[in-house]
Length: 509
Image 1 (cartoon, helix red, strand yellow):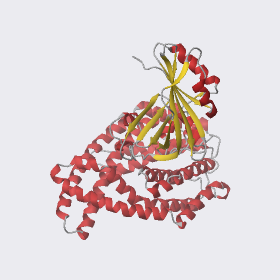
Image 2 (cartoon, rainbow, N blue to C red):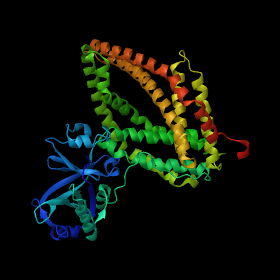
Image 3 (cartoon, one colour):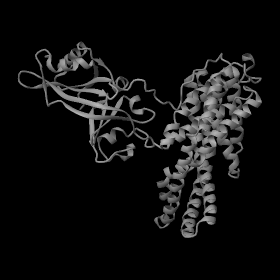
Image 4 (cartoon, rainbow, N blue to C red):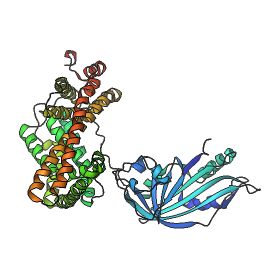
């Protein structure tokens, strides 16, 4: 049995009173309760994933309410404040938010007051034909909006249609919660971890490189305040991804910039990345804490308790150090100076390939990197050293970055068809690398602790040693999968697609 239809309308603020007093043909509006006024705070993740999906989450006192264009308002009463979706106990709001990232915190977007009441449109016999849930919002900044949720009753479809016309006559416009968000909190730009950077195939490689770097610097800087406030670990993760992409442009766009300029820019952006490494490493360990416990028998959990206690203390120190660094005048001068340089590309010294058309240059770079990936992967055997597999992972990442950077100059369906198997190979190589790096860092941790701690050495060493053994086994399993993953990536159909899309041909020169 299907649910009765639900419609959302944005109504002029002054028209809400008319809706409550004007008859709907032979149906009279009946307020089901007195108007309620409550304070509210709107919440969303930093990337505004709720607004993008047409939803609005409100905290009103001890209740969390979710408005959506896909169903009636739902609420869940909590005695405690939540930071992440995972903090919600089981209930309707948690179920409705299960698509949100568990790593993204819920942050206040804005606050104000909401007045609401429910109108039933009834006939002479007192039977309800349809309802209107009217919510009038006013923010602290003085922005106002009215949202009306229309709900039909089975068997009275014509009455709901009349109510839609009635609301439209009062100036109502069918909309979603995204529109409500814009009305209440105008001017709030949504953060995008993958900013769209338009590149034309006829543009020069120099112009393309400048566009990509200057497009990622604002995305990088948008994460600074979240890192300093330590809202969630994704701010630092995204900051590092933006830096990695910028540094990849400098490494992969060979000959576009003057060699001396390239070396200097690489050094500058590497200097920005260096202070972020220790905190990110600790974040990864702490985020995967439960996985490590699951890998070992309970008898070895005592050592892990000590281990993660130390990691937590180290994270507190690293968080403070990095926040101080990002707040420093020196950091602000450096990042502002780099942003200014790329906002004035005429001041950047060009390389010998600067004036090549972006499309031809992209084909050259992507085809070169693809052939390198195939050559390394084809030589992998059960005896291949870990370093060679790590190199394959790095080249796959560079290939993917190139394809994503230049995506606007290639047909999207064809490019997406190649990115999918490449991502599958990357996932396999990423897990292999994670297991390897974790073993190395745990070895280093044991070595450092052997010089600095006395009491818990044996218990910690036993747990960490067992963990290293398990991780080594997992790494061997992933190694065995590398060749299978590459075979899926390098099947004839994919080879042909790469050749048709990127290989240089004499008649194209």
